Image (tube, rainbow over all chains, first blue to last red; front, side, top):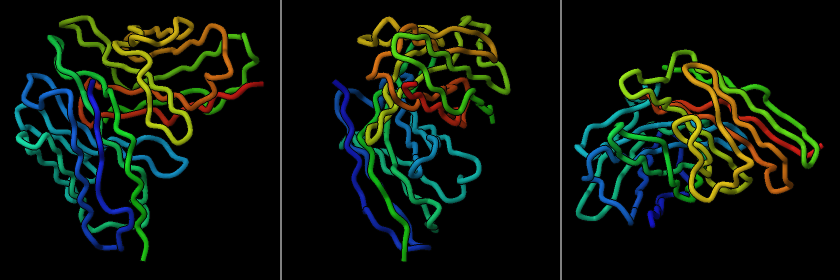
Length: 123
Length: 113
């Protein structure tokens, strides 16, 4: 069974850097095709994909946020870390980490998802 | 980026009736090499993370009731709930995993009429 737990601050001041940690179990991030994603959802709004890190440590980012995002992994701890710089109130959202399975058809859909971590950006 | 557009934004259907949600992608999400559509559907209830319903456009996830079905190919897809139950009230999202940046539709809010 795959599980995720997101951890990090619930309140961040504008211009600060957000660091979120996703601790997972039930799979290996070194298995071919597997990826871990970060997705966010502002209150009452739609899902917004932010970044992913692949089994081979390749990384992809949302182009509009690429300059502010960094995703890294620690395979020994089964953790993926997302950092987002220069936080703004519009970045207030629930941040989810989530798994993408690998298969003969490449990296697949996003499932399962963590419970999410609500981050509020306010002075 | 591949833009995903769902219709309608909101939908009210009577219990036991059929609900249909459409999703259109700005580019094809069909890989010709394996003939698979890189399209998934999710259900999200308040206060919960999204739950996977359908992947490869039409493959139902294990444990998902068979009243949920997905269809379509290329750029046009449909999620159908054959007989709406009260527990199906939720927001539904389509998602393309054909290429990064991954993208989602804007969501369809499904309510009981």
